[in-house]
Length: 97
Image (cartoon, rainbow, N blue to C red; front, top):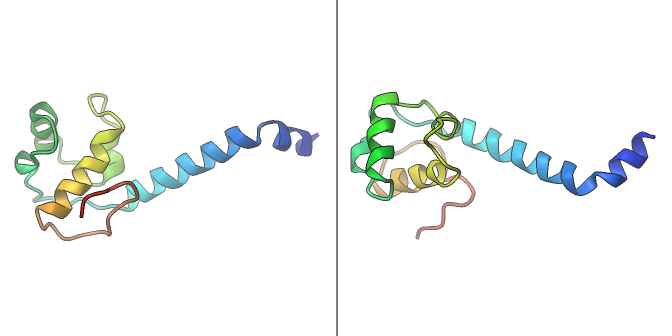
C-alpha cells in the first residue's frame, strides 16, 4: 500500500520535499541585526519599512510575514549581496551578477 501511495503521489511528494529544502535554506540564511532595510531599493517601500520595524533574523522569518510574498525573501538576500552586507552564502534563485 505504501508503495502505491508513493507512486501515485510521487510528483506532489517531490515538490513538497523541494519546498522543505528551500525553507531550510532560507532559515539558514541569517540576516544581520543592523541590516539597512530602508536602503534595499529592490523592495517596495512598504516592505522595507515593515522589515525595518520587524527586523527578522532569517530570510525564512522575513518570508512568513503576512505582507510578504514569495519573491521578497530572495529579493532581500539579493539586495543584501548588492549592498555588500556579509553573512550567509547567496540562496538559490538570486540571479544578479
